[in-house]
Image (tube, rainbow, N blue to C red; front, side, top):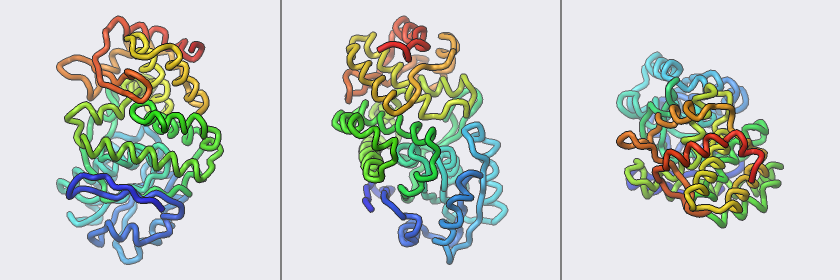
Length: 363
């Protein structure tokens, strides 16, 4: 096991990474204050890992909340099920919520923990690669709205993150590839040596070689933890850099309907669109864009967006947390490994959106 730390003063917490962590009760016990525990999971993950988790909690008063599986259920209506279970069991402010699942479960559990009795503890046990390398770390929680993704939520740091790499053995191939998009993101925004490592080891990652996956998770979490420690609440532009490709990607998810495209798939296409726009602004050359496309193709991720009109794309992109004073700002690349937040000239942005459907055939 390897342990990293997110350094946030009195709200600092460990990220434990390794094989067999769901067989180590002491890791959970160290972060549990009271006896009352609500485990939130979904209908896919709970049959696989709920019993194993419950065996680690023999002396606790444990309740369960099983949500339907899918991004389309990440909304206020289904969040209410978590509050109902807490109230039905008369849980108090010393309770702890445990998120056992992917990014949807983690985001909803964290938001519920932030809101219930104005704040209770929670622990992340992410079961998808995407959640392990991104959404479980950093304290961003929330739900979607039909008009915008992740626009309703709160910052709520977990007490701990337990990443058991063994659970990736049951992860569908499509979900694994979607997670690799967020892994690649770290190389593109701030860690060029990591990008080079990924280019060399992508086949091993797709083959689920344990040592390669563990290293990719560790490097990703190190990058995420460093950024969160420096700009926890995104008051500066540093944490916003973690959203490379996300404004484009969220527009795809919203425009196509939540659940049609996996989050990582939309982000992958969005990162290539961001690279294309960066090239149009004179910050990347065609070889850089080709390199971005090549590693996404290596990871078997989509590189061409769906058929969404330019105006529809812009409409969805306007509902974004990086909009300030009515101006859309995007995460772009001044070079590979060097991301910035910048407004984009409307004409150049429209050019990228207009050729978006052909990006899969170029570079």
